[in-house]
Image 1 (cartoon, rainbow, N blue to C red):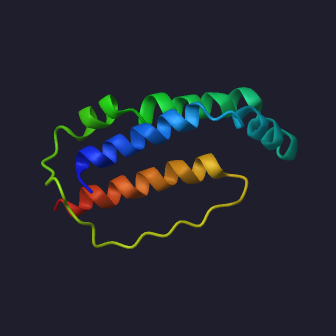
Image 2: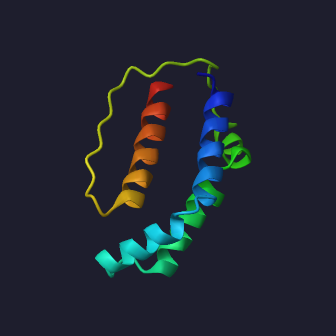
Length: 107
């Protein structure tokens, strides 16, 4: 998969995530099950992920300083174990680990 395709895929994920009709129901359920997940902060987190991390323009600008072959391959295995109630945190950690592995593969 090319870099362009990966960026487009992440952009589509951001679009779908921000337009999910069940988002409010999920946020309400999370707040019921754990009071640390207030609806305001959960919505703010989702919005920030979609607008600050999962946009093609921002991803392209972030990757621009790096020389990246179009069809590079990562020879790494990455596993993430996450608590059931911490999906957004797990998603953030997943993104960080993937980009860390990607940057280390350039060396």
